[in-house]
Length: 178
Image 1: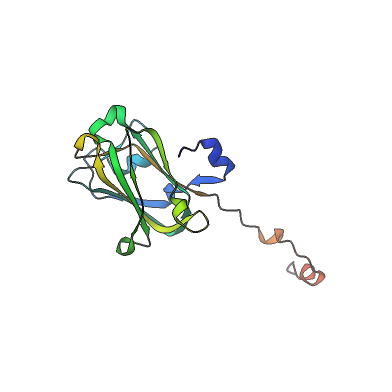
Image 2: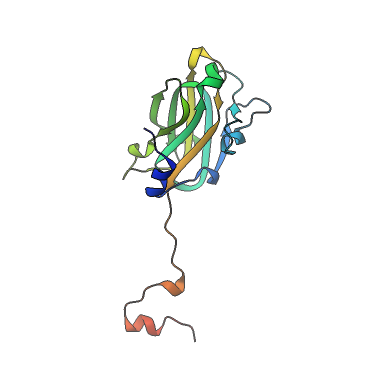
């Protein structure tokens, strides 16, 4: 499934990945996990070790997620490009539950995974996301991921106290301090 920036704005979605604490099971020196959040497709995170490679996004409060989007470039990364990934969600490491497993073709650009389809009311409620890279193209060992975005509905703005729409005379008479 592919969604554009215009469609995200229409549906009121925003990237909440900046609210998460990111970590990885391994990372090669010079290619840290922070690269998946730098908005630069020329940088990437690279694993360093045996599979599966695992990335974590831990939120300090519960978030409702619609899509997990991953930017991959098979033309540059070839055997470093994931071919099978699994996404799990939960409140922490102790209770992660698999949400979806996806097999990828030679992915170029954004891959939008509708994780909200596996939650209530079209949204996946979670404190932690886990992205596991189960295999790479051409049986590659290490992986590259260039960018990750986590899309959630935009939270409605809270009303200021003086904007609360009182409807009765009794409330209006007590709406200001003396």
